[in-house]
Image (cartoon, rainbow, N blue to C red; front, side):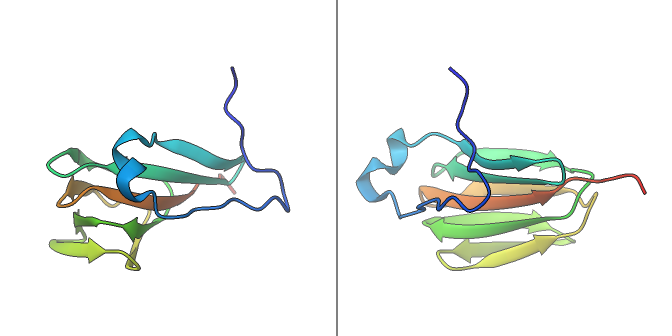
Length: 111
């Protein structure tokens, strides 16, 4: 079954998952030619190794806490924190507490 992506004008509800967070799956919420928005769940002790993407992105911590390594430093992000990562910049994430993140990625477009 195909995953549902939000249509223009559709409201997407992103509430804290609380006790259900460990059963919550990663999900692409919006997919458009120049934009992708994802809810990423990163459990305590789990990590995403260093990688880069061609487009700029933001990481918004919705709940929990993570360690975000980007642009030469490692910083703790907690609920309500937002980080901008430049296009092509290597970055890595590690769960400190079970966390839910909103990741917005601008796709690189050739001029």
